[in-house]
Length: 253
Ligand code: PGA
Image 1 (cartoon, rainbow, N blue to C red):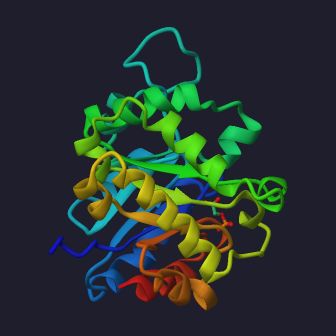
Image 2 (cartoon, protein in one colour):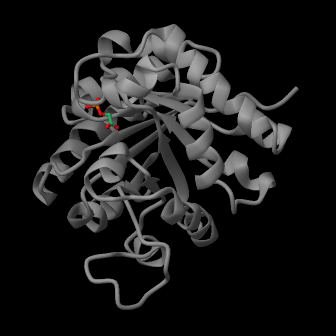
Image 3 (tube, rainbow, N blue to C red):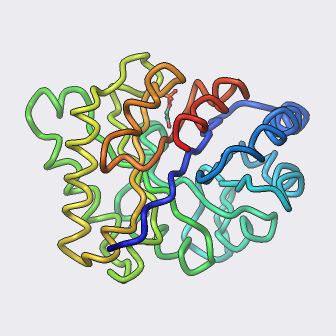
């Protein structure tokens, strides 16, 4: 029997919260997490708050993730930060390929194919985001899109390490819209993802944690995370409030 997968809930703050606000959030969240039990809690602050939140989370169960990184170690890449730099400020993980980065900032699958192995090599937990647009879903292309993104983004990952990557299925039409995928849609997509991973390494596929993201909130988190292949959530809007985020973490535990 494979080990049960430990649920993971991540707060994707996007471009929100100053250092002071980030600290206040962790102060409010911290004590409540002690009784939480079996769930990994990850907070993804903006890069300006990484160092302060990592220092504050040190010694607690909260892990800190960046929202992006460059694949090179160093060099003439104005405005970018490397995996080693994220490790240097205390980050444990990094969100890669978020749809906002893909749609608004030109993130490509070619770059992600280099970012995922670079994160793993540096000891960061990659949280790779994939998902289809509404037009792609309506055209019946959801699985084609997921297959294309996964094949490209994970092309250079050693199959045995696929279990060390968290993959978030985030349908773009559900992000920040208040529209959530149905439990069936979420399960169908993540089980498709697990099946694809299994095609490369069955053990890794069984241990990889797959998240749902897109308008997850306290009212819908339990039923989404109760799906057999949904191992947690990547939460945007509802993660800005510590009480809402805590309620979602509790639903995962
Ligand atoms: P949302 O964002 O929860 O606000 O829809 C999710 C995400 O973008 O990761």
